[in-house]
Image (cartoon, rainbow, N blue to C red; front, side, top):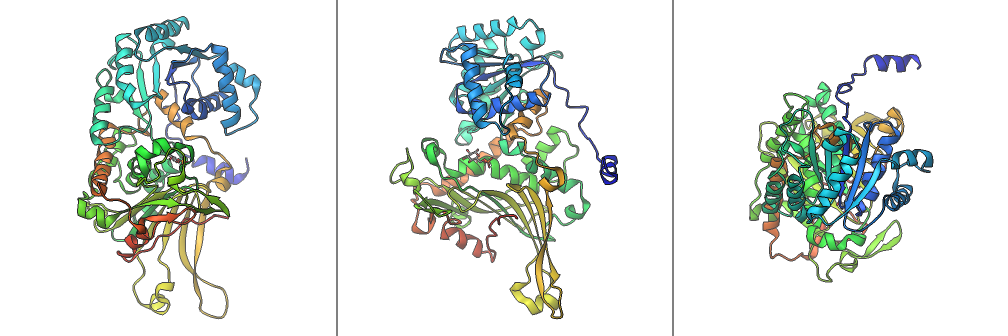
Length: 520
Ligand code: BG6
């Protein structure tokens, strides 16, 4: 360690070192033959294993309908990890040691026998902790949640948490319902035999380092937090753009659209972290209380407001990076006259003391020119005297950009004098890059999330009222769209930054979209 590293070490504050003790447990994956298991869950668990982050002992049991032996499933998983792991090649010695903990138990989710077999399997591990500390991962259709939970309860595998020694938790994935009513139903199904604090709803954006850093950035730096309010901020733009089109996911996407696929969860989560009030402590509930409070202070959108403040879009054929791309209606499993949105832009107002009158612009879309997620906090311009008077609109206001991905970092834009004999002002950038500061450390969101679920820390998971409040917002937008086909101004060519209607939306308030830029 050199001198400056030693100094950094002295002032590094490790907040939750003590907390990270995970008890021995078994993780049971329902729907184990699906994509999520092979692409995300197993690669994440494998990495946790390589980093000695998993408890010892630890077991993974996959449950699905198809009949398979343990060695067959392990072989399939190895092939998947070789394809999807963030580090390659896979060290076979390490894999084999990891794979010894993996087994498969086949069965239909609706049959009592399936759960008996699972019970036998867990008991066969010969360790009370592996039989009773259980993380159930429901990678199934949401319509199966209720059934699985009930069967687990009947088989005495899941008990409402009131015992001190052992725990059982349920992890579920999006889509968590398709509107408020269905989400309420799912919540009722899940909590019939389990307490809310046993339910861990995943939004993988919360597993991203940069998303977690939003709270740290805001509440551990007085410099920025002082400016984080309506006195200083002109408006905020949250952009989650994707280069990829819908591709093979047309069947799912026809039901979801961008509003359910991205806004209901990822964008509203980022918004709540950017705009929430400081929590009373760093524990899960105070943080989630503040996020819910923020979502509840978003001004409700009636049908007329939706027409003025929310824009949909759908891509038609175009080109990205010089390569032709099909239109959404030509994608597999998409109806040839589909009106499903692949782009959404909206202006939200937050009716609370801090943000009253500050527009928050959110947008997300597929087949855009670049994949990037960022939050841009645009500050108010200087008074119209001195430089502002001379430069007019050429004097850009200050902005802080939290680049969530890729090229993770934070950028502060301010104006500086160009050296020389003439008086020339231009924006310059102060730049913090995760990679240059901390080295290339890019754990998958699932690694962090699985570990937190095993540790029983719900901070990075979505609470029942949070998910329901977010659906309330989305439902009111969808109500405004009902029976209204897309207009010409709502189509965009693949490879452009969205439809003209989105430009109109922001221009009406005298602002303009700031597109993410490639970072060099
Ligand atoms: C998923 C959506 O939740 O998030 C996808 O279903 C989307 O449509 C993805 O592509 C984006 O995640 P990330 O981590 O690539 O930004």
